[in-house]
Length: 147
Image (cartoon, rainbow, N blue to C red; front, side, top):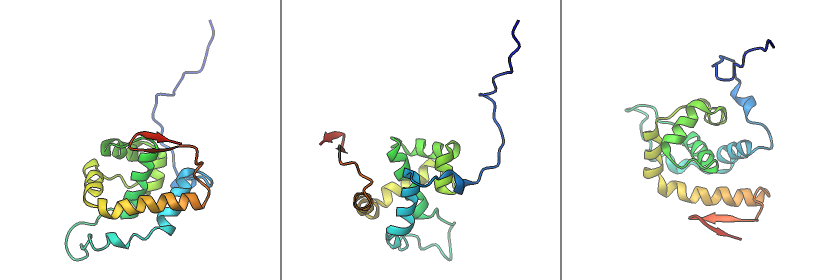
């Protein structure tokens, strides 16, 4: 009878991970991090978070935007699924710096900050267009596919 090594694909493994090395140059995640950190003006969020003397520390708006945009890009529109991805998906962990916000924090951020977030979506698309990252083959708006 043949003697094979066991399949350990369902076994957990503890390995050291450098999150910065997981975001490879030329990938969507790299472009997303660069755009959010260097091209977007996020000062509109500072007025909302006036918690320097009282209250708990808030999640940085840059991190929240990165995980939300990454989630939307991967088809995750549920705050619960985005939160789960931050716990189990190495790309989400890397983009967020291993910050794992609760799904209620994600949902609350989107709901309360929609006026600040909406113009940023447009800015991200315009920056991606300037950088040649948009293929211009098809855009989807509210589920309608337009050439």
